[in-house]
Length: 514
Image (cartoon, rainbow, N blue to C red; front, side, top):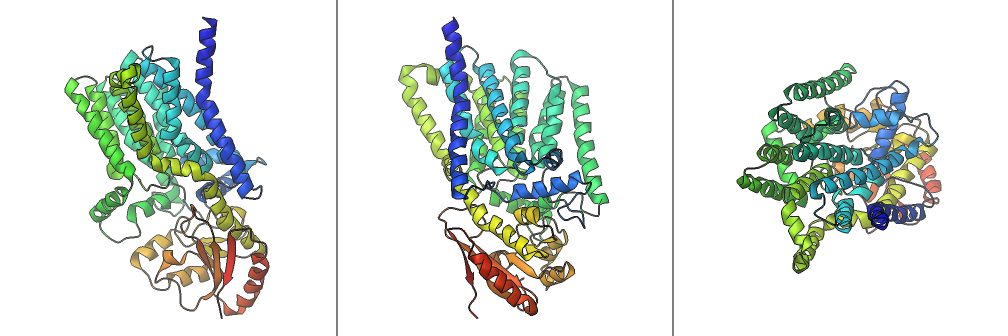
């Protein structure tokens, strides 16, 4: 008995060891490629860090002279703000995500035990737990420094509690708190929270469901009122941009256009397939309400969610939700598939197909260090130059530049400068020059392709920061440097000449030929 317990303990530790080994390899590679400097694999976490630092000082915004709402998450910046006074504040998103990743594996194990109970060996259960390292897209989400792994963790906790209710008829009342927190992490999480509250209502927990709904609506409304009272819109600018796509089209046109964009990602069709497989179980006339609610959640996300395919950070939580429910509804099929030696071939084929479907998930796992390196070679180098320049600047990616810059950072994309959204939608002539003059930003660093037909003809292009990388996470490998004032061109050029000598390998500044 003692030996059996030890074997089970070893099996339980294997997924943690696999996750730790992958993270260790990736971490060593990141430090090696970035000359000992840790950089997240996106520029976005530095937006949250900048916002959180200012929240800790009583201001909601990227720049201290004005309010802004650049974060799609209500909760995440406030959570980070708790750690703003600490010397390791920059590493806080990574530390939190490591903890959230480990906790996610812990609850995945509890879910697997709950679904399969004593029908599968400990080794086979461990295999399924380890499989969720890929399904949950864990390592890229941990290194992203964003709130998505917290979103996955809360989704998994909610799944465990709902399945416990389905299987053992036990309701953990902390479920309401988890649903509230999930809704505050990201708006698209409502695709899960609202239908589950509806499920609780149909199961007879009407008062509890009503309380949960009232709390969620009240908190979302309170945040909307808060940012609107600052002179902003009722929704964060990042949400407005995703919903408007910088277009003046009506809401119906934008709705269908968003779906068409989402359908370019293979995960959209995976989720659609999951809806079909889950609803097929209605023929057995069991778990009817649970099936309807699950299908409703996934359908809501397919219609209204953000599915952009950037290592699937937006839709990982709903992918995890769908696959877990699939395992529960098809548990007998899975048990038969893995319990018979004759059927191991089928299982192997299934796993191979699963890996093929998730081939794009394998891509970010393999290239995570390269993603970090591309941010280091571009955004970090821009931030270093901005410090050397020591004046107001205009950029289209505000994360690292705003985090490391003590002067004003003008956001020409629109996350922290809400007027940009209206200007771009209306294609207002001269808006880039107007804003740059208004905020005294003489140096502009942007992706040219993002601003076709908007860049003023009288701006002086000094050159481009170019990356020589086969794989990169940045939107473009060339950043153009402009100055508005001709009298400042020579001074900036001299600074750039000095700066170009300090650039690391695979980054080069090419001056425009006069």
